[in-house]
Structure formats: C-alpha cells, structure tokens
Length: 501
Ligand code: ADP
Ligand code: MG
Ligand code: ZN
Image (cartoon, rainbow, N blue to C red; front, top):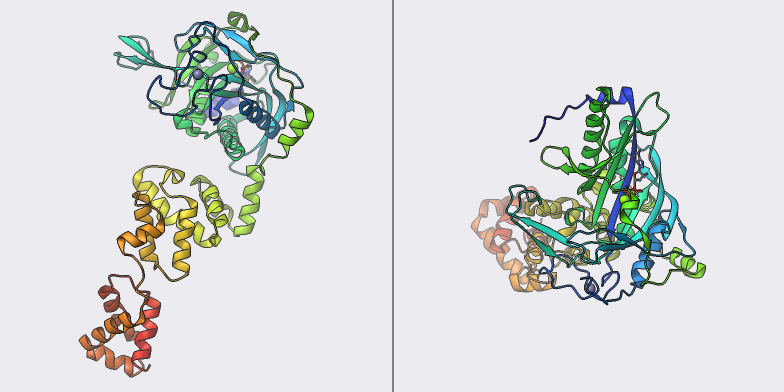
C-alpha cells in the first residue's frame, strides 16, 4: 500500500521555493486538578480512575472553571508578549470521537485569552529570529484510545479499542504562531529552536512539566512552499503530534522535500493532517482537514465569560521569571564559562540543576563538576535524563558539604551518591548505613601508619632521609588498610610527622 514517495534534494528545494511555517504547540498545565472538574491531573494513573460525571460528559453534569488554569494561561500569554483579552469566552468545538464523550471539546475560538505576541528565538549560530504569536487559548485535552489487535497500533485493522478518560479534561493551552516566512534553508532549524525556546520558557514559568516524551508538550507543524515568483501562500499540510525536538526539525525538512517533488511535477498539495513516523523520518497522510464550519463552534453556555481585571493581569506580570535566554547570559558570565562549555551545560539540561545546587549552598565549580561528570555518567548508564536521576540538588549540595568539611573523600562521596540514587535515603543516612565516614581519628591513623612503616622499613628509611616522595607507598598502604576511608592528605601529613621529615 505504501507508494514510494519522491523527495527533492534539499538544496534544490531551497533554490526553487520559499518555505512557510506555522507551529501549533499544545501544552498540558500542571494544575492539581482538571480544567472543569475536581479530578486529579496526574500522569500515568490506572486507566479511568481519574474521572467524574463532568469529564465523562454525563448528562446534566456542569463544568466549573479552574482558576489556576486561567492564571497559567495569562502568565503564558504575558511571557509571550501577548495582549490579554479584557473579556473572552469558551466555545464548544463539536465533533464526535470516542475519546471525547461530551461530543464537543471545550475550547476557545474567536475570543482567545491571549493574542498578538512574539517570542525571540536564538539559533545555534547566535542569529535571533522573532516568531510572531497569533494567539494562546485555553482548552481541554481528550481521552486516550488504545487500538488493540492490528499490526500498526492504528485504528485500521484493529480488533477493538480501549479508552482511558484520565486525560479527558486536563487543562491545555494551545499556542499558535502567525505564519513564519523568510527563514529559507533554516526553516527546520527555526522550527526546532522555537519549540525548544518555548519549552524552556514554559518550564521557567513552572506551568507544565513540558515532557514531550509523555505528551505534555506536543507540536503540530504546518508547512507549505511558495515558488520563488509566487505571491500567494501554497497549500499547507499539518504534521501532528511530533514528540521530540529532533522530530520537529526532521518533519519540517521532510515535508519540504516531499511537497517540492509533487509541486515540480505539476501536482497539488492536499490540505491534510499528516503523521510523522519516527523510524523512517517520513510523514504519512492522516485525515483531510476539517474547516471551522465543520466544528459548528458556538459560545459555551455553561461557563461564564472570563474578564480578567487589569490589576490581576499586572499582578501576574510581576510573577514572570527572568527569561531563560537572559538567565543563561547572566549565569554564563557569573560562572565564567566559554560559549562551548555553556552549550554543553544547556544541552545536558544541567543549568537548573546546577543553579539549584548552588542555591542549596554549594560552590558553583563543584556543583557544576558533579552534575556534568559523575551524575551525567550515572544518567547515561540508566538511560535517563539528568533531571530524572533520583537525587535532588539539595542532596548533591549536602554531599559537597560533607566533602568540604572533611567527613568524606571524593571517592566516598561517589559511594554516598550511589546510595542516594539506589534509594537508600538522605546522604547522612547512606553514610551511616554504609559506614562511609572518613577515618579522622588520628590515633586510628597512627596505628595504620606505624604498621605500614614497619612492613616497609626501606621505604621508611628513605622518608626519614628526606625523600618525601617515597611517602606515596605508605599513603597507599594506609588507604588500603582503612578501605579508602581516610583523608589521603591528612595521612601524608601524619606520615611525614612520624618520620620527622
Ligand atoms: P487549524 O485549526 O487548521 O489547526 P490554526 O489557525 O489553529 O488552524 O493553525 C494554523 C497554523 O498554520 C497557524 O500557525 C498558521 O500561521 C499556519 N498557517 C496558515 N496558513 C499557512 C500556510 N499556507 N503555510 C504554512 N503555515 C500556515
Ligand atoms: Mg489548530
Ligand atoms: Zn472529572
């Protein structure tokens, strides 16, 4: 069934066409409860355990708006330099699909809460592209369907479908850009950089956990091409739910090469949704795009209009975080890092973790070193992101403090970290339970030193003759005897003192 898709060489696409992009990002808010009912808004629960008559769309159930959801929507709008509506409403978007038992989705249509903004996006080489924001509106997520039986996991060929309504009614903000033009060959990179910048901003706002892999941040990429001499936009396709930054870039690039090949042969692009296939890096046709008439939008009669007072909006403006791009510049200057070092930290997702470790009292050099070396290795071994490690910045700061006050050597500190990662409790508990304290009791060290000196009399003589470099062998023996739990520097001092050197 899969016809071979012809693709045009990317260079040639750029010579002949100007790409036009439009990005729609859906973000699930991290409110405690859903948008219109009191059900818990958490990910990964047992299917259909977080449901009630409202989010199941049972007859007679009435929605109640989540105030925190509105607050987050306004803060997102402000952070995106948008105007905030003085008055706006929800609308019913009518369609039938089993994952939405109400038969309509509560959304906003021509009265979004935020509109007319922009986000400045910095590309890898430092160029800044301003992406204009059309609107950010509130809506609710749908349930999830699982198609069982078929080979592909798609509804076609499935034997039956299972539905989980835990996600139905989860607060969503949809952020839609105006058309992005003039990016030429960099269109795929601009798309990725925009989603990445937006993700960082939403994270800094603390309105969502922005996990693309879990679907709490999802991007639909609209792409069309204009021949170089054209005066009107071409027909767009909308590639749905692209779930990683890399996929955003690949999906845009693939659509450009696919559409170009069709256009030069005199074919036309269908306005349709498409699905990105991770494995092949290609897109396949979804459904023909509905028009807004198909949705029969009308104002939601069960919810009152929202009229955020200007005082409230200004109060919320005061809660905006330092924009991530500016914060990075400041942090880079404070920590005195090169552009390259800084980019590594950003790519490792380590900036927030290091900052939090410093805020918990650790010196920035040590905080950085723990996160980028030992902890990064552990994250790699476990195949998880740095932030997903089972250790908090405060715990890392505690370990650093224990090294600083001489309670732990670096080697012991790594063992303590291993213990925390293994769920053995707080650093102090791990020290206690694993018996990892540095042997700082000098009399215990003297005993081990005397034993080592007696075992290697020739080395002892050398040290007594002033050949202090020879002390290394004795230090080694003492460290072995104390199972690495002595402070090597202190041991060396005591050996030299003992030998009168
Ligand atoms: P829909 O309801 O069809 O998803 P939206 O208005 O939500 O439409 O989003 C459409 C997105 O596509 C917007 O970002 C818009 O700027 C963009 N867009 C519109 N026309 C084009 C086009 N010809 N080529 C590329 N993007 C487009
Ligand atoms: Mg849309
Ligand atoms: Zn509910």
